[in-house]
Length: 228
Image 1 (cartoon, one colour):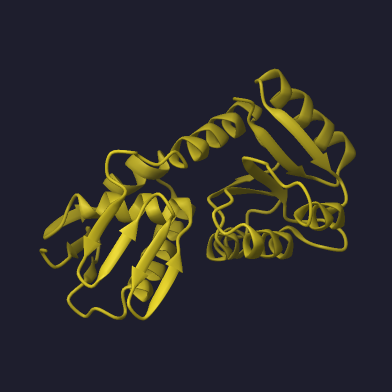
Image 2 (tube, rainbow, N blue to C red):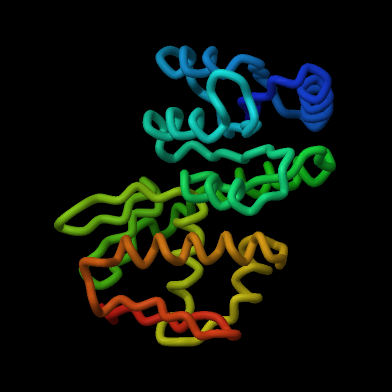
C-alpha cells in the first residue's frame, strides 16, 4: 500500500528537502506551497493518508487549514510543523485535533518515525470495535463516542488514550507510564499535551457522573468507569 502524504509547506528549500527525503522512505508526497490549493482539493479527490502542515503559511495558516480539513475529514491524521517553541502553538494544534507536532528544522528520521507511529495508531483492531462505558459506547472503528444525547467524533490520539485508560479501570496510573507508552517521550510539552487530551475526555463524559478521571498531583490519574 502506497502511503500518500499531504505536505503543506510554503518554504521552497525546506519543502523540497522534506519531499525528497520522505520519497526515499517510500512515501508518496503531494506537496502544496499554497494552502488554498488544498482547500480546492477537499472538494474533489482527497485520498491522502496523513497531512503534514506548516503552521506559518501565507493566506491560510496551518491551524486554519487544519480546521477546514477536519471539518470535512474529521478522522484525518495531522502532524504540525512549527518553527517556534512557544507552547501556545503546540497546545493550540492539539486542541484543534492534531495528532502530533514537530519543530523545524526537524530531524528527517524523527519525522519519519512520528509519521509511522501515527499511521500505526490509525489502524484499528478488528477483534473488538465497540466498548460500553457507562451510558456511552466507544466505537473504535468509526472513532465515535456515542451517548443518547450526542455523538462525539474522536481523533486517533483521543481514541488511543481512551482505550489505554480502559485497561486501568478502578486503578491509579502514572503520568510517566501514559507518556512513555503512548507518546514514547516524556517532556514538558508532551506532558501539557496529555493534560489537554484528559480535559477533553472529561468534557466528553459530562453526561455520566459515574465516569471519573481524577488527577492525582505529582502521580498521575485515577480512572473509574462503571462496570457493565
